[in-house]
Length: 168
Image 1 (cartoon, rainbow, N blue to C red):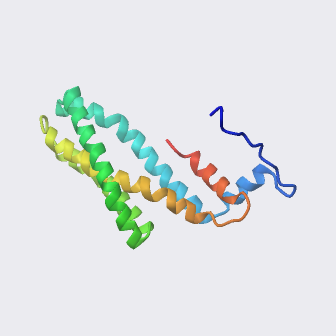
Image 2: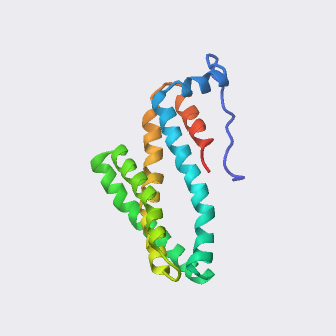
Image 3: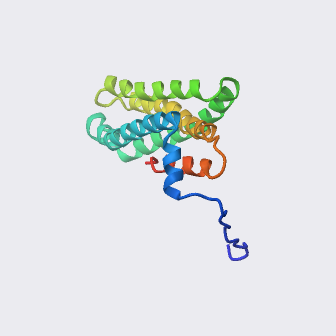
């Protein structure tokens, strides 16, 4: 980046206090609800993310290589589903598919519930099923956030800042 020119930001003479802008951002009920959904979803990912690999190693009995193969298949399905969700959201908007993806992601642990020792195929199916929901959630959450940012001035930047605090 040595050749990239750095331009100093210019402060607008009528810009307000940062804390006032943050408070204005939190006045939006829709944004607060969306942040609440995202916080609950992030919390569930933190719990599930920590427990699922212990489950795969201890209960299912998978080794490192099979877990790596399942993760590789999951990432490939994540990529494939992103194209499908993109076409689906073009036709149906973002809210409906987001609710559907949250439901899919919530039902994913049922697949692990039915898996017994040695059922690494079923556990892998759970990972792929989870990636279907996870992919859609990641794709739809940001466009919905941007649709909430209708205020003029620094409104969009502060919405993104408030939402960015919630990222895991």
